[in-house]
Amino acid sequence: MPTVHVDLGARSYDVMVENGLLARAGEAIRAAGLKGRAAIISDETVARHHGAALSAALEAAGISSDLHLVPSGEASKSMARVEELCSSLAAAGHDRRSFVVALGGGVVGDLAGFVAAVFYRGIPFVQVPTTIVAQVDSSVGGKTGVNLAEGKNLLGAFHQPALVLADPQVLATLPDREYREGYAEVIKHAAIRDAGMLADIAALDPATREVPADLIARNIAIKARIVEADEHETKGIRALLNLGHTIGHGIEAAVPYGEMLHGEAISLGLCAALFLSEKHAGLAAAESREILGLLRHFHLPLQLDPAITTERVMQKLGRDKKFEGGNIRFVLLRAGGDAYLSEAVTKDDLVEAVELLRGTVE
Ligand code: NAD
Ligand code: GLY
Image (cartoon, rainbow, N blue to C red; front, side, top):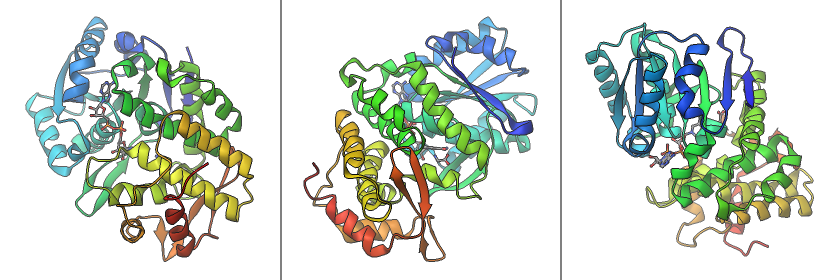
């Protein structure tokens, strides 16, 4: 079974990736040394598809569990839900001897991870990611948190999971659009650190909805190595994971809520980052085209709707935390698999890149 070990000293853990792993979640949790009762936190959609299977797997390993649900969607990443969930756990008799199991996409993982970080001043938690984004990205690295009206992820804590159980088979119930958007982050990781993987992704047929476990594991390993090198994002290494996210977040925030999925906005952000990498980092046009071709392969957007003005995107982007002290720290690619953090990009460059997103992309 592909297992990626995340080496963080006392906070180290395994990310196990295997088809059918959900049914063996209890065994794996026991083997990782977790004890006590489990509070499963999930959203209504994911629980409908996979909640019973997880509860049965825990029961089969002698782990007693109960289920705590939130509505599906980004709006559940709020302090109000954190408080509700903590009350619900306390009312169910959980205490510092319990652990949390986050069953869901990035929303549930971030929310449940934060609950685990603050309940009784911190209890262990297990990530059981059910979207592609959650399997390759959000379940690994220990960033947990919720949103404020003023912006996304403004409240949070670093709290590493004790174990991550990624079962590619659970992705079969994802709607097609959510399946395709997940590949934006897979492509992003490959573009940052593993050029060879770009060709492997190109060989997949999106129509078959295939998500090979070894590709997921290799993609997770990219993030794992980056997190090991810069757990708390203080050394300019973890920031590389923001490739495509500066302009992507601006676009996501500029579009009416719910109209564009995160991965779709990141696809546009990646297009802009490719243009800026050609301009400032010497990225070869052919490499840029290879990555654009991959986004197109998964039917991800490469063109910005003219109704979304550059002014509005720039306004939203100005609030992004990546503008530190007025400097724009922007992730560029020298080549596929070779990302670095640059200070060469100006605000005018960003305006030009957003404008270009309205043009025809080859
Ligand atoms: P999500 O959690 O909202 O899931 C998307 C939708 O798919 C939801 O409606 C959910 O109910 C449904 N769903 C999930 N798994 C399913 C399945 N197997 N079958 C059917 N439906 C399923 O979205 P996401 O894209 O997974 O995560 C986005 C969130 O992740 C954002 O809040 C983002 O900020 C966060 N994130 C965090 C990190 C991190 O490092 N902590 C990294 C990337 C993203
Ligand atoms: N998703 C970016 C990070 O974990 O740092």
